[in-house]
Length: 138
Image 1 (cartoon, rainbow, N blue to C red):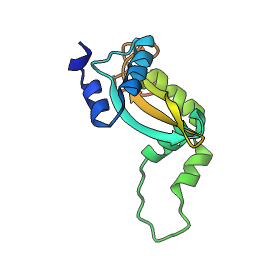
Image 2 (spheres, rainbow, N blue to C red):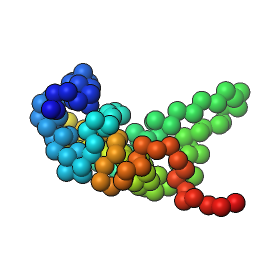
Image 3 (cartoon, rainbow, N blue to C red):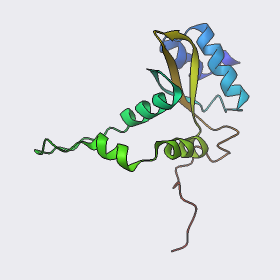
Image 4 (cartoon, rainbow, N blue to C red):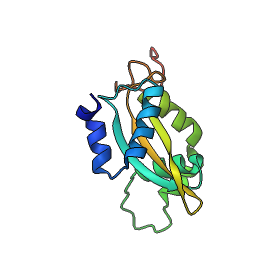
């Protein structure tokens, strides 16, 4: 059954070991992820989970602005404006994001992998493209 899943094929292509894949599947099954709809997003090495989430999400927000003003730094602006903990919480609840700490350390740093898909926490509407705000009548 697992052999037919695209997430398994993706993880193998990305070079994950059998131990890593087993750990990832155990995590996903614990939170009742729909494995057919779960997608791999990426991996990062970091000192801890909080920093892993922060740098991974910030790096994923690729905003290019052509400006002759060399003092325009979008990442610094984002850092001051975004509550990254709340941003992550909403991604978990609304879109089914997860961050999995993989076993084994590399020079005091740990590997974290990111996936997304419908699960017990996100509910049945995790893949629906809707606003993070509750419905409001204007």
